[in-house]
Image 1 (cartoon, rainbow, N blue to C red):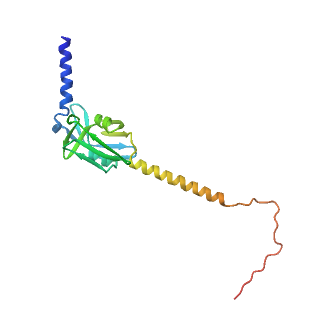
Image 2 (image 1 turned 90 degrees about the vertical axis):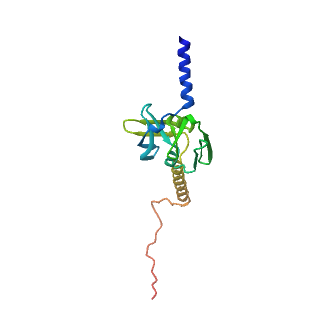
Image 3 (image 1 turned 180 degrees about the vertical axis):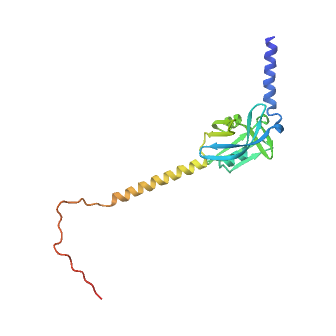
Amino acid sequence: MRRKIFKAILFIIFFINIYGVNNYEKFEESYVEIRCGQLKDGFFPIKFDTENEEVYVGLKSLFYFLELYDVEVNLNNLTVMYNVLGENKKIKLKPEECFEADDELYVSTDILKSKFKFKNISFDYTMLGLRLVPEFILPYEEREKGKVERLRLRAKKELEKKKDFIKMPRRFITPGFSEPLPLKITL
């Protein structure tokens, strides 16, 4: 009896892994608020599987939101190529890990977390909010880092200018002029 139950469970797990995303035509399209660091969009499109309470995110939309504009999504080969700060990434997805709808490749948040290197992805069902924490540096973070570095260098340069200026200490008794010097005015 236990062997039959074990075989049935094994068959179900195998069946789910082979055929993956089913009935994606019935998924509801919804708009949520997405946040990633300081980036925020209050009208981000997702697909929502109400039966399994699973969120599916379009990859092109996500990468454009993250300001990673150099992304190529091949719907035929199920490959995603993008560039993060000079490092080229190429990810091959399996047919059971994604689905194609509206010229967009959708993946679940679990696949997004594991294959696309996100530390944390959370979805708040009550507030319809999606929060992402990537393992890589985003372009806006690199820009902020550059601004801070420029400010630091500017402050260092100002400090060096102040060091070059010689300041004489004030003395209690100083030599002075007893009479004012005559001014010469010519007309």
